[in-house]
Image (cartoon, rainbow, N blue to C red; front, side):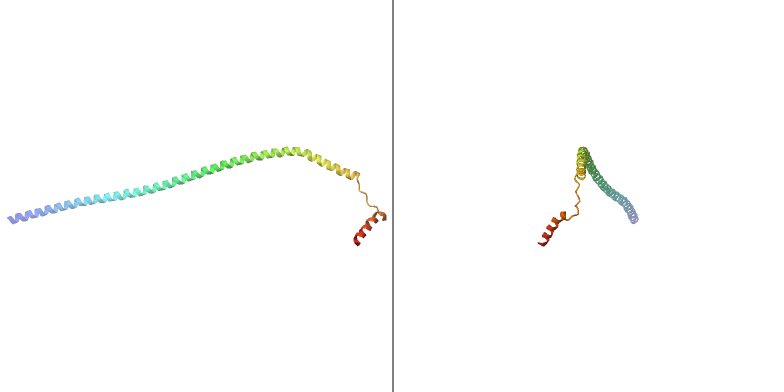
Length: 155
């Protein structure tokens, strides 16, 4: 009877140990599942952090490009304003020179007409009053020149 009781107690103890081992195994499995889910959660958080960092990097690059574009636009606007001012100054200078030329032309036209009229009068006077006379055919008029020419050629 004692052996039976001892065997029964041992069987109960073995069952109890087996039950506790199964419970411990279940607890460890739950703990393992918890650790696994925590690991998955950490991986997901890490992936989200990487994606967030990439998004922030892209946003920073986009912002820098936008700032550079705005600076270039401001530089172009300043350049265009300078060109506009230069064009306005050139236009004013051109108009001033045109006015000066118009004034000079107005004064110069009278003198030009006077000069042209004087030249025409001199030409008419020359042609009208001082007509050159044609050489007359004859020995006396051409002889002294002919002799001088012959003397010069002989020397």
